Length: 424
Image (cartoon, rainbow, N blue to C red; front, side, top):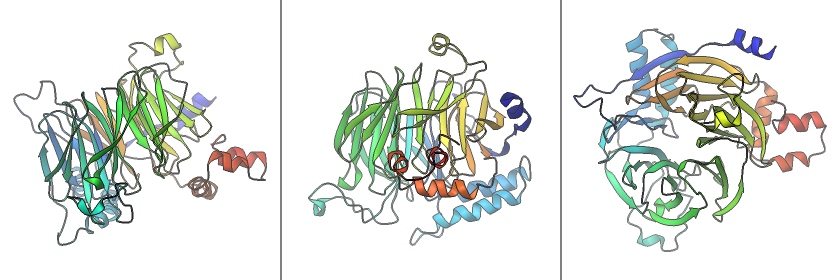
């Protein structure tokens, strides 16, 4: 019955626009993939690795405006992107002395695998004691872009000027993923094929603070919890690890995947963790209790662990949480982009796209960007839904309370189950 309901309710995702790579004589050679896409936390910029060592930085409001003009209602109504662009342009107006954000094309010198935006909050000081000796004094409006390269280097760029600020060298293999702590501290974590995670303090001129060693194979991705206290790292060998980022200690391993785990993200309220794997599934966890709440399968009927652990054609490449915590997006090798409703436990909308590699929601959560093997990026609108008042209350509560704290409340079991997402 559930399958029939989900098929009936499923619709085509609303296409907004695309960013295509200029055709070059070498465009069929290796190195043209868009391995990563990213949105600035304040909604001012969009960045993607468009292949051949190039990263493109585009003002997001300008991007949306071009979509609304260029597509003239194709796949969306013209008023929708314009309304979105007004919401986003506020972030771009915070730059002192600059009329509007500018576009930048950055040559990183090597294949770009990882991208991450980092914004500074002045109250968050460096953990280093000798603060007066710092070369860089990052102000309130600072916006940085970190790029992880094929040669193991990490380059840090000023988003507003496009200038190179720092060159971080310590990894011995590909830097596959980068993530900044969301608290404005400019603490950066890099995940590498050299089987390590490294923690960098950019407010201490990029000093390396810690090396996290526990992975036995490649590390594919890492993600901070919204309060910056927990880090999830995923990698080859079915690995999902949790780390305490206050003291850089290992917390636990989450068991459940049957193949390499390649993408991870916490929900905006911090209550859930989504991981994507080559085993054809996205798993949604209560990471605080180390329990599986939801399995989103990309193959029906679900494959055996042996098939899931092999070279199946349903590898899930990337997963991303929408801001409303009601929707999760995933991209897989079956040429589909899926928008899952966690309440219905099924795709609410789908879109066809060959060779998709990565996905990320915009800062407001209403647009999904998907990068592909040819270096292009495609954009869809997230299915619209009005969140219930009880769900809004649940999100507000879970931003400040752990599962264990919720369970200690003297409230009915049904309410416990709802607040801990055991009932979606």
